[in-house]
Image (cartoon, rainbow, N blue to C red; front, top):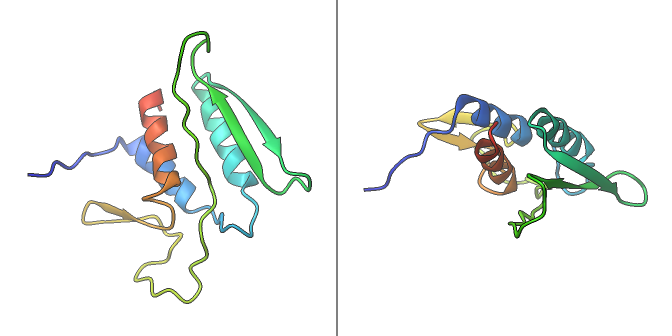
Amino acid sequence: MAQTLQPSPHALQLIQTLVRMNTVSHNSNLPLIHFVRDELQKLGVRSRITCNADKTKANLFATLGEGRAAGVILSGHTDTVPWDGQDWTLEPLSATVRDGRLYGRGSCDMKGLIGMAFAHAGA
């Protein structure tokens, strides 16, 4: 039988905050990047941001620990694809929890993974 894992309330709130940010690929991802950077800083995690030429999009690089031994790289994206013309029952940016499931654009993709990474990093 499948087991359901329950995220901590804080991890769920982080994921919902990320999902509610409109990062459709033609929009800027800077609000999300700055939010994640600020949350990492609260955990004592060092990070740096690099921007594209017109400073509308960015990448975030974070290092946990001293960075001296072998480690793991989590590489991903923060943009989502447009939902124009798609038949959504719930608003794509609502991050609604219903029947134990989280619904929203990016929740099963990188935004959910970023939240899970926070949960394991001590958020």
